[in-house]
Image (cartoon, rainbow, N blue to C red; front, side, top):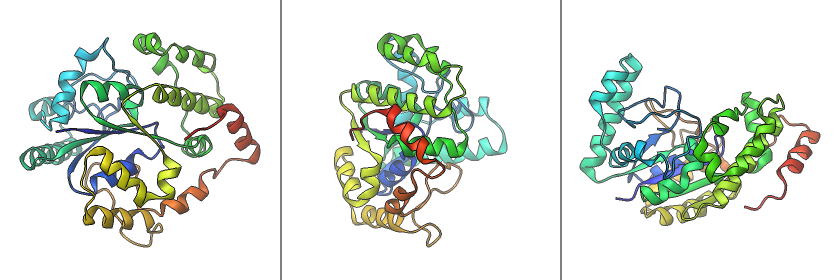
Length: 299
């Protein structure tokens, strides 16, 4: 059965998109197996492979280290013993029960795997060609993307990219980021990461690149099209849950949210209203600078 990968840089709407695709009940949601931090990463029950970098680049040169592990993940084969050997805290045991049970249920009922992983953004082509994934890559307007990172106090550590020889081999433009590696200019670094990721995604065949803003402005039509692309059933249940999740003002109702241990960045929201606050926290001069650094934007 064809797995689905939802990717894009962090804070580009991957959690929201993944949850809406899972709303129809045909997918088992797997959160960030390539995240190098524990949790949600470093869980060999979900992915029995060593992830050494943020934005791990996977290609022909290191496929052998990841392909068997990801074949198990997308086939919903959970490694109970491997997980118990590595992680035994109460939280880990709860996560083992939840994911182990979900994987088993998915296999027994013919569900497909949905990987929600922004850290797979540079490896989208490998997931499409080697695992046969239907890949949906979210891209966000650079002003909204940078504003979100600024509000969270995030920055980019470019050594995570520059220390991957295979990434440098296949995408030598990554070397242009070296000039900002030691910079404290968080805006310039975030824009540079945005530009590089857009360049990689734009050169990757066999994936669907989706503008976050366009999807948020028209979520019902947008998700209907993504359901068709991913081979999912656009059912009354899916439409009802997506409508409730994407048109409910924050705090006005339960919507359709995560539950249990697999927490993501998604919260029920009026997606169209959320677009109006994309630049929140930035000055007009900062917005103009981001636009200038990002260059022309084509969705």
